Length: 457
Image (tube, rainbow, N blue to C red):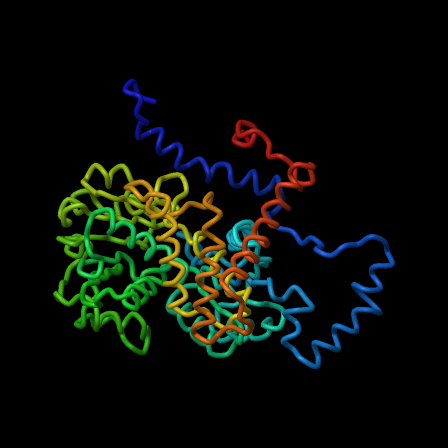
């Protein structure tokens, strides 16, 4: 702390690096982050005659006669597979399926704690998109939903599209739909604070990977004019004359070259940022991917979302110094975390509760609008444009919004009222949180060692 009572840059950097220092020893201490626990009562060994043979044959026969009964007689209604091939893990790139496991386990932990969803990490040893789709088909009978994670583009678009065509359960790619959902929610409230109409503003997306490509499509679906979006990849601004982007190689990105950037801008990131109202970075880890002088070229009261992990494209304090009115990152140790964990637990809670067959972009928009509404009701300001993970009450509300949209769009297997959906979501999520607290309270989950001891290892 400086003499003036302000946190120094060195202290901020040390704070930013601390999670990476603590993570390896804590992962080793707990030997992983998730486990399987019984949910049925076992009062004596005689109970296993019901839970297993011979009694279990009866529910098996019922499911054989009607496969949809697997959602009633097993935990399939609450099972989600977190599937990755390890080809695009966070900002680390193609590190392989084994190295992707800590991320997938972390995802499963968030699913359970925030959404009450029983999620399983499945890291697959293949890079072939058709094999990935086939693997999803093979595991479909076990799960109520699939969460795709950390798969390189354009393969991720193909896998998502084909899996959604072939499976009768929701398939969701969190790097696409999850990121787009939370970015939209953040932008809705950021534009309210700066007093601008987002549907009349210019928005630049830095990075044209899975996250920002889906963000572009969701923004357009929500009502942003395609021409008001400017996209930049590693080779420059997307425009119709980009000969290196071919329809046969990447039809999704190619389409965006044709419909975005109505001004016909060319160049790189600085040219894409000049005079725009908001910038959303989902590119490579920084800092210095976005420079302070480029923020100074933006319109008045600029909005800067620097969402790259683990290091944002520009440090938040530097963006503020350059004049950014609102700054968001993907990190939990700074204000305004644009975090997918605000999206997928509640969204899956909702679609699982109505046994939906898919997750549409309209359902993502319904979730985004509920996230924005929740934060607005609490009182949005420059450092609070989105709920945080501590705002657990947002997850049941988000679940209800998605479930009702599922019913409205005719993709839900069962129909429940708003009140029934809300009460169910609250009960399931509270049970998950209280179960973990009980295990910790009784020492069945050990307390972590002191930080000083961990940092010595």
